Image (cartoon, one colour):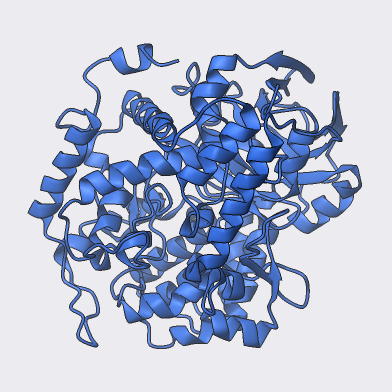
Length: 579
């Protein structure tokens, strides 16, 4: 088979058994891999509780993984989120995805619960269940060090072991399966780590066409100022956005009470590069190298992390922010939710944590001790238990990232329509509202945003199923990646066909959520954004969002999607008529 291996490895931790099965060809062609194939494989189990042993944890690569396609050495992990209750996926790069494909596997499908801590070791067709009692309790660096001789490692830290609702799965190279708490799902299975190695090559149907498409992608990358320009992500990483968000007056500050932080320049991309002697780093085989590492070899924080441990908590000390990022990565905590939960807690108690207090609070979170027992639940549950539910800045229990929606109305809508909760990556309207790519739109207008968001969600669902990095699309487009996919698989794909696949995936996710009790009432921003203004200045006025206009555009989104007025399906017709 070209592109895909066509194989799924099913592992049952309860019985310590594993078997290889064949994936139906139609599923591969109509869901691709990554997010899409994982969502299709959830069809018989999406109603299960997230910690039910039968709930699968699905590692799924794409048809371009294992090839020279730029930014395709990635995978998606799919399950049901303990933080949000929604269907959940997260994409991550690193050698793990490449080596999983080299082991002849498109999907690793893990169910059950081990009686004792265990690690899973995969090498080609060989699967071993390794006792992990001595690793249980270890942080990520110690776990990776103990297993890396066997291959690439994906592991949980103490946060996942203790069931922190926003625990990450961490890759050995420093990448994270972040947000949503899939590390807690892994911990509930008493699975400490998965380590993979393989030596098989991915077959390509048309090498000449593939090389041409790859050259087209690389040429577009090099022509993109957002990728390789003097202020591009290749030079400074995603913290290059810090100064831009400050200029646009939409940097979430003091738990989103304000939208401007005067000292944000202390942790901007250029400041990090100078203070930390940042070196280029990135995912395996990626030409962009948007990640940055310090002298100690550890990954430096991304934009969301510096902004949330910075402005959101009124901290302007770069070293403290870097330390917080390192502690989260070592303990296996999601940085966005961890920082946002501290911020909500800070507003509720009337005092944000100081820079010096944060590392100990993060450790308390991961170990669920002291104040950490409550902090480990995320901001929504914390705020409810403390009697201030309105101070959780989240949608569907997922904390909002570092773009204040009062400064970008497409972002406001996208947070609410996202199947997994308050996420910026499902539609990423920042691309056109702030970065002006591919064309600029008025960030203070809802006009046309419902259609733009629905198209972008479909496009990004296809991208997440290929699985490619979204940063590729600052330069290339679905046209080039459709050609890469056609060349790899020998099956004709067009941009329109990819968007139709993406649409099917998004609607399937919404159906799953609807079946689990989600509706229009969950597609809503916190009241703060409708009732309070942001930090106006420099000729920019940050007003409260017009609730009536927001509701009108949400109605339009539902109509475009073929949903009823409650944002749901009227019956099961959609699901029953999908491949």
